[in-house]
Amino acid sequence: MFKRILIANRGEIAMRVIRACRELGIRTVAIYAECDATAIFVKKADEAHLVGPGPMQGFLDMQAIVDLAKRSGADGIHPGYGFLSENADFAKLCETSGITFIGPSPEAIRLMGNKVQAREIARKAGVPIVPGTEKSVTNPTEALSFAARRERRDLPGEVHRAAAPHRVPDPRRQAREHHPPGRAGLLDPAPAPEADRDRALAGPR
View 1 (cartoon, rainbow, N blue to C red):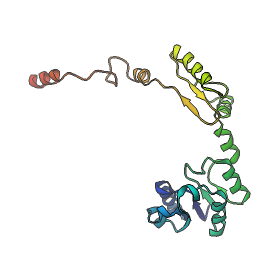
View 2 (view 1 turned 45 degrees about the vertical axis):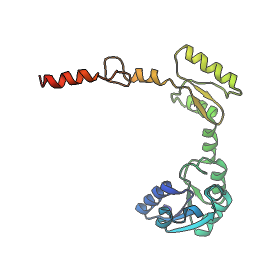
View 3 (view 1 turned 135 degrees about the vertical axis):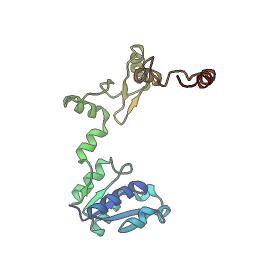
View 4 (view 1 turned 90 degrees about the vertical axis):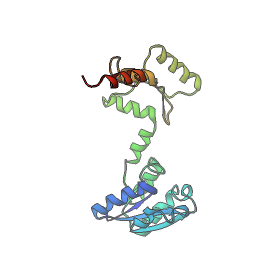
């Protein structure tokens, strides 16, 4: 069990971690920028440390955060989400510094951060995946060609760069699938005002 956790995030994300730690009897260390000086998470943490004039500088300085965790006696760092939460280098720095990164391993972050590799891992594990490009696209022409083939066949699909997927959804087709004709749904026409009036005048049947 952790004794003290540094929260490398801000706002309501930090507050969620603080509340959970209080329930578990774990002390919390917040970091904050000058613009957060009066924020509620700064007041609710057991201790708080200024890390810079703005969040972009202080909350992304990996070495400074790890050094502060050591000085404050934290045995774990909770990254929340965003900022450094998906940074494999930060997770590795925590690991080599003897501090627990509360999240996936550096290798898992690195593998899942590459969408092509992540799909291949899921496929080998037998996890269903959305049809998409098998390799990373390298130019807009490849992406448009794939999307056109899927559209001609009226099929969903994903175009993948190594960094992130790009969905090509068809909202109206999705609505038809979820609300077939004859059932109240997104595509059913609203009743005419005259019909409402006639039903009201007729009274209960």
